[in-house]
Length: 246
Image 1 (cartoon, one colour):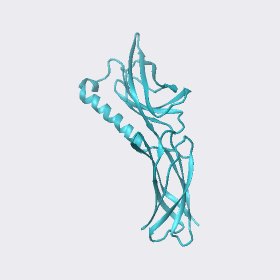
Image 2 (cartoon, helix red, strand yellow):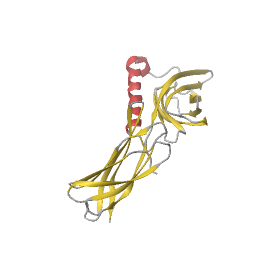
Image 3 (cartoon, one colour):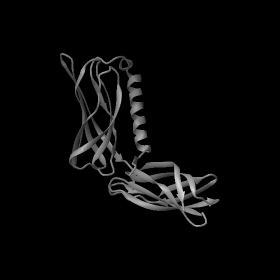
Image 4 (spheres, one colour):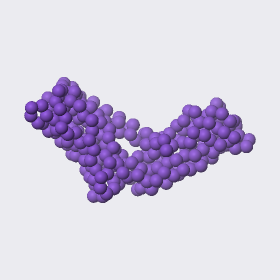
């Protein structure tokens, strides 16, 4: 399964991390100068993998040039599970954003909230330490994969394409669309993701509203939508070299 996990979600998470970094720099001009002590900041947004085996988090960290990293890690805990992961901090004297998946080592992770603690320890003749704790909002990641081929119906009025989706238990799939585009011809179909942690494949019929499809290359796009806690989250996949076959 070629996993495209909640593109809209991680992109928003990455943007949030960049904005947080800019905010730190704007709020403290000294932060733009080379670091003289280690620092670490856990961001509050997080994403639960469809199988519940990891939570994606963001950390902003730095340490003084030419110091050695002894530890750079993040732990995530919930009543149901715990995990820990290291991140590849190097001491270059400036802030960097790290995106990491924290795997569960005991129990299982779930949607909702979690507690995260990040720790940085560096040494150069002496040891310095920084730590930060944050309550995470853990939202669902959505993995979606469009097939590389679509089957052409006699007469060209529609094609059928397989869509494979996985989303965490606790989220709810809602009506989602697939679009297939070939020249001036376009067709659309719908499916509803099933959120239980396992991948499910849907054969979706995309019927044309104008013209007919022919065998050959086309484009396709889907947004796999789920809801959790009153909000909508999307996994996105696209393919500009879809092959329509008889």
